[in-house]
Amino acid sequence: MLGVMKVRLVGATRGHALLKKKSDALTAQFRHILKEIVSTKEAMGEIMRAASFALTEAKYAAGENINNIVLESVRSASVRIRSRQENVDGVRLPKFEHIIDSAGDSKSSLTGLARGGQQIQACRVAHVKAIEVLVQLASLQTSFLTLDEAIKTTNRKVNALENVIKPRLENTINYIKGELDELEREDFFRLKKIQGYRRREMERQMQAAKQYAEEKQAEEISLQRGISVNAALNLLLVESEKDEDIMF
Image (cartoon, rainbow, N blue to C red; front, top):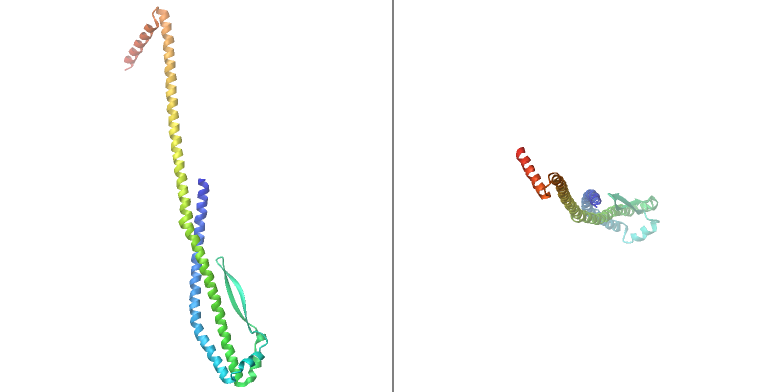
């Protein structure tokens, strides 16, 4: 279990580092998109003002009934929107692009309206530019919201790994190490107790063997000298004490 917990801790550490890098990259992209949104909105005001003024000029030059003329001239849409996805650090961001279809261009049919046709064409160009800015802004804002949600999700994972999973694994590892140390101390104490028991048992056996040898020797002395066994034992005791005094 200690090995399993260590492997999990290594995996959690690597995952935390990767998610942290992903969060930093997404945050940098988020700030970049935010700057683009601000600049696009600032430019959009001027472009929309120019488009509105161009429409007023076209109505003044060609009359108020230019709607019917334009509708009769247009056969198909000249501006189309295409959607695609862009992968940014594993997050799919929607992107919108405008495509100008030359088949739907009504320029040639409107040039015959003299000055009114020119004003209508200028109004069309201004509104196409406004559409381009609106499409760009829609793409940026959609990516902005998608990135915001992805950053929140990634940060939640980073915080969970850093504040919950990694501390829990570290505490489990410390607990297992403490239990293993305790088991090691118990084994050492058990071995010491067994060694002490064996040493005492050996001493007891040696003492018993010595006592048995002394008793056998005392019986032999008692038979040789015709004395009792106790007297022979006392005689052996006196001789052993004399030997010890000589040694000292």
